[in-house]
Length: 469
Image (cartoon, rainbow, N blue to C red; front, side, top):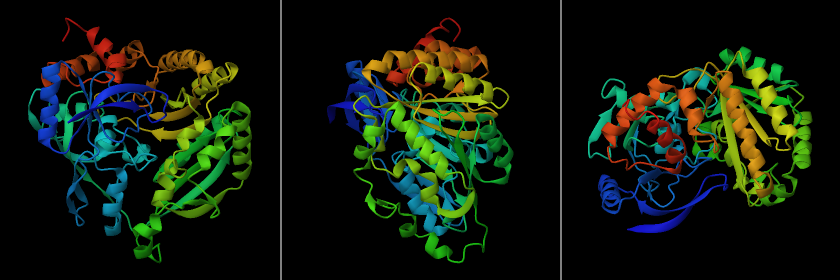
């Protein structure tokens, strides 16, 4: 049964109406493809809907909701191999494996994302420089292609499709089962080192110099007082370093607190924060955060508390108001990141649309066809959207694209909302797009798998290759 629903992106800045169909089995997916052919509709796979842009939206088409296809079918605590359906969330996964001394090798900043969505976006975490993307830890997956083929893919079997579907934004087929290798851990705690940075140059140097010494590293950057920031770097505890591993590996120990400082309930916090979501208010919040962070310190923190900062304040994204937020992420080679981000942040500030949050990471290249990775850094920036600033903000972000491209930059298409097909053509290049087009024609000859993201970026980019496929 289908239902006509209104879908939003995670930041509540984009909306689209589509027919929702729930997937609980392979037969449901096959039925969705048949209905699409019968009625001339397109299909978009959707998990938790945590993309910041239109990757899981399909205006006027069908949205195949995988959130109920969420069973963990196999788990081997001896080898750390787990087999899941695509609707399994990161939270379900870590809660299932942690008591046995394992942790997912790569996680997102929220535990509510689904594995199918994580593979489609080929997510990276705070350990990308060390562990790569989540796709590098997939042993195999099974998928249904719109052409009707049921395939099993791994680095050894159907490898071309393996490296294209992971990070392929759900445009070639849909995942049915995913087999992942977990990471062995000996404690539910991480040793975290935190220190301040006073300039953007100091910030990037800290990321590069200290990444080899830790398992994870991430930075917070004040994008209004450009350069003030803080680095958090963490390492796993070795066997024997935790005096009470059974306690810290328990699920109860990992539960995020429901109150701030043990006093203030978190549930209504987004309402209390909203009056401060303006340029002056964020300047004040960021300045206070920076002053508090001036002391270097080392502490132990649970895995959940370190990794899932986006889950600390329920519905925090609603603090941005009725216009919502968008996130822009660029990835730049380490040689060009400093001058480029200096220029970008100054440009945004000059136009009165500074980002309210900046998060930095250290990255390495990966082998996937539509990779966004570089040997360098990423900067993810959150922008408040209002009708008064929307057009100005879109122009600034397209200027960001131009500046980044000229410096060898790449972009992450489950976050950026304004990127054009021309930008995609420029940074992917003809050879990679042609290979993706050939796979699209083979796996989905009728063009059933589409999304608003596809029609904005990939459709026009692939159409420019007509006669070359």
